Image 1 (spheres, helix red, strand yellow):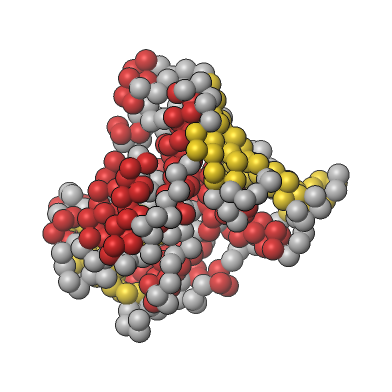
Image 2 (image 1 turned 180 degrees about the vertical axis):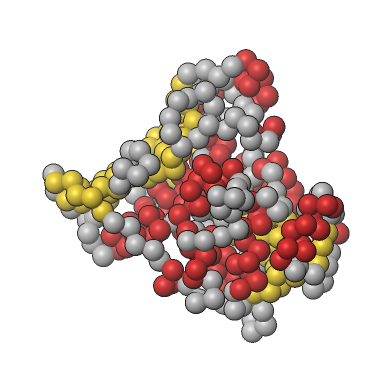
Length: 370
């Protein structure tokens, strides 16, 4: 593919962050945006000079001048909108999680294979500067043999849109699962999960999930390494954190325990503060600046930035990988099978928690993949 990838963005809350990135990317052209509120759509589209404007998603994906759709809509819409776009012949990038059921995950894998179009789940943590640095430490031998991995995501979701209320903690677990599996270089095979504590009856009634915290132990495919993942969403006092820890035989990386406390590299038994570099040099010059700046700032805030700290400079890396996978006619780094596995870890973990810690095996999604 030699022409620019013509991209449309659906959902302009968090999704607005990607507008200037696609506009500046040398291999992309942002041709349309979609939002249900016509007034909000006009305000955003006017601000950035976007020509195509849709309040109807189904109408937008029928536009023959759109090659790819980046979905940033509410979680319950992800699967249906992804499948519809793939069937309309569009490449799809979608914010996390991929879906909310195992059946939806398989349906997306199948749809991507049948359409022969790229799918990419836009998991921010595995393109954060912290992850990219630790990935280098693994690849260059500093960490040595990985012995154990831990991921955690603690976040208070009070005040977020109503569909979040009472959501099972592990149903939004990819920020903790993704870096663990990406560093291990394999997929999850099975999970045992413990549900702990209780949320208020009003919250629990929304999804039938009573737990304040869910913590899981994972077995990994073709690996002797184990992993642990913990997740909370409501009524658990803790500073917001998306974190991962890697234990190696030569060195171990430990995520900072409080914001600003600094990450630690344990070399043998000696803990040392570690400085995390920026990785903008991996990006085209036109979008490199977006690792440290974006749409949202102190005067123009979004909840994902108030709590998420800008997602570690990941956004231009994500957009670049999605676009380049299309241009180079190769699978994306977080393709449909990978995304289905990462998402299903959380779905299966919650099933395990509801069954008093019964082991649940992760489905094999490779059938139907292209």
